[in-house]
Length: 206
Image 1 (cartoon, rainbow, N blue to C red):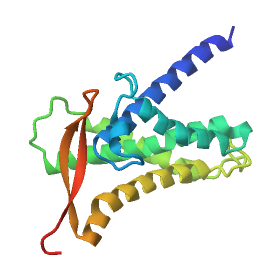
Image 2 (image 1 turned 180 degrees about the vertical axis):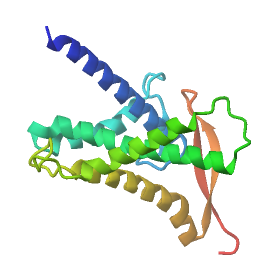
Image 3 (image 1 turned 30 degrees about the vertical axis):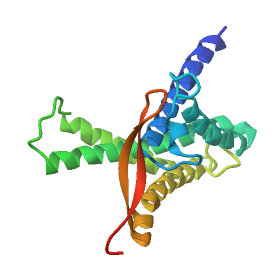
């Protein structure tokens, strides 16, 4: 009986995170980020017209890899670590962006203004959580032996850097090298989903 509440809470967390991740994947496809087989499928609500199953498939593929790749005994804590570390990176840059907006656009109307000591504390906490995992633990191995204690940090950073490089290559580097620009246009799918698609237009001076 003790494990039943834990099972229920864990299941709700998994379902919530999975659905949220599938929606994020769908939104990326709706913004025109190039994916295999085209953005239309991944941005759609196929087959029901109500839920983002294609986005869930995108979430499923790396999830299976992360579950299978590490040793079975440490797969679960390793997954939790990988999930948490990139989130702290995002939190860190969100607070940096908040301070940047406060500095560059101080007079913009804001429905809510966070009290800056809270933002400073949140920034310090995020910075600590980004640095602390690289400090060698007292047992020397962390909670995912035989994997290095810092491996999940490197994996999380590598995933985010790969995403940034992928976007930069598609949006900046390739157009500059081959002399074209990406022209956005809107398209409505059969299920009512509005997506952004890009077409290439050759630059005249190229």
